[in-house]
Image (cartoon, rainbow, N blue to C red):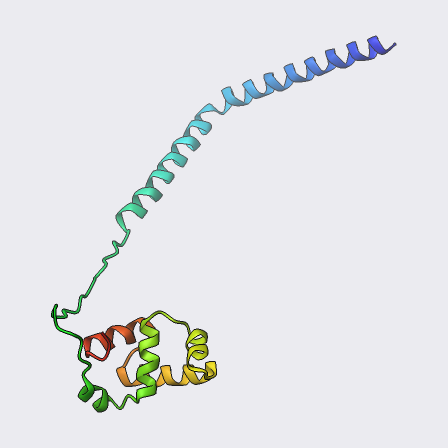
Amino acid sequence: MKRQILLYGLIGGILIAALKWMEYRFLVLEHSIEIYGGLIAATFAALGIWLGLKLTRTHERVVIKEVPVPAGEPFVPNDAKRESLGITPREMEILELIAQGLSNREIAEKLFVSENTVKTHSSRVFDKLGAKRRTQAVQLGKELRLLP
């Protein structure tokens, strides 16, 4: 009995596979022009997207500005410029620690003040220098000879 059930199941599976294969062949032969047209359209669409992205890509330009510092001379801070900008000694200390790459929290721990105090001093230094970011403040400090 098991053998007959397996035999009928196997023959049924083969017949279903043969019918599906015939249906597929009929579908491909009947609609071959549409299939080829779709493949060509997809190829040209992909080529157009790739070419459009390639032609409209903006090229990044990296500008590096170096501040010339005479070699051999020890650094002498420009105190007249610091006073004309109105930068206090504490704000100058904060700017020097920012230039060393310390975070606000690390500066606060080093100077034994709160983090909010560091933020206040650094924002005042940024305003006095006309900087928007920490890196810009350090760069301006070096250009104005406030920092080594």
